[in-house]
Length: 555
Image (cartoon, rainbow, N blue to C red):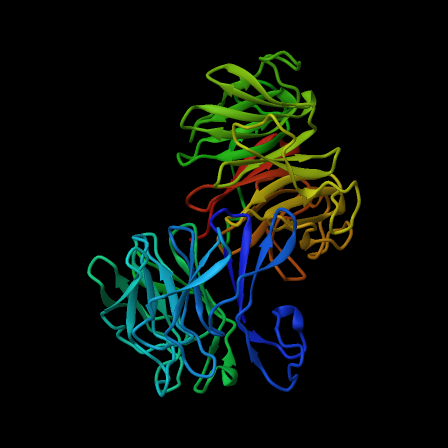
């Protein structure tokens, strides 16, 4: 087991190693070259990964060997390592200083413990819960570490003893503790909440399944996704695996099984649909689309050389950029393919594809942000970085919003046209997740690639089985969106369907369309952009039908 922490400068990864696998010396290092391969060693080594150079370096070693400990980043940038086990269970704690690369001893916990949790609270304190100790299979004791005083304080114990559980900081500041094994060696389904303002615990809804050694992830909507783990009596190695998952809703305190959304198969036309043309009730080859919180639709109206805003439940759109004929003047566009809207300052960043420029419109004033770029599609992440796919250089570059006086950073492709894992062939739409992983529709390779942040090559997460119409194939994929559960939605352009793929699965499934090319309400014709509204209704830029289709979710 190893612990990974991204340090505060967000460029280096601290790896704190513990147990040493007998046949894999790369997991850590041992100072004594005469180690016995028949013995499991406990390590105190630590290493740093530099994401800029892609290299590893050793840093200062822990003062104590330990495994099954926790590591937490403090608000001052230091790392707190707590507890674990070696020859026995530990209560010691250490601090890592990234500025010096050294470890120092801080005050010890009141309890020895391993297989516990450590959670950084909004007030900067560290909440440590449960675990296993000498003569105790599972603890219910809880402690708080104050980085300012470096002192520990006992607080109210959990209602249940737990080890191998999870602890998740919710958006309301409370901590959700889930599952684990109790002091009778059986896995739990119960969950409880810690309130930092009162330092007390209350029960909340129990999971549908018992589990320990699972994962718990905070979703963008504030819910918590729990997946996997093990169940049944006995110590960890003897547990039976669990392949189920559950979602906890803090607003109700209830658990539900994740369900795959379904949509009505007959769509409603919400923009265009009045034939190919440039009237206010028409669009001509829509490409990129965006739905705002008020369900207004922003459309890159490609062949009309304009950006159109179609207000919710209206019969016609309003031109908000371009619309002055095809051209390269500042007030003109030439085949816009995508846009990003900033509704706070009413600005729009546009991929002005035919003019090979990225241009911003702000209150009918224009500014060219990037010249001479074959900008195909755009995306933005939560940190304010702009991503641009380039169909000539076969790459995706990233810029910090507002800082375009540089060449940007290549985050996908950039190794020439090709079908290797470090290459792209006509990248189009992108989606950037919470971890800044970039999903790219690799159009002419008929696949969707996922490039993790700072990686040198991508992974195929959908398609990649040549061009075709089977469930494991695409034909020139376009729009791509990834939901909170990691499900990948793709506009399969020349198969005239929208597909859903779960990462790791060999086949996708058709969610709408797929009824051959056509203009009926259950048909599509070269779908491009995709978007969801806040009710999970699905919108599709039905490009060659010159309309935007809304597929309503089935509740």
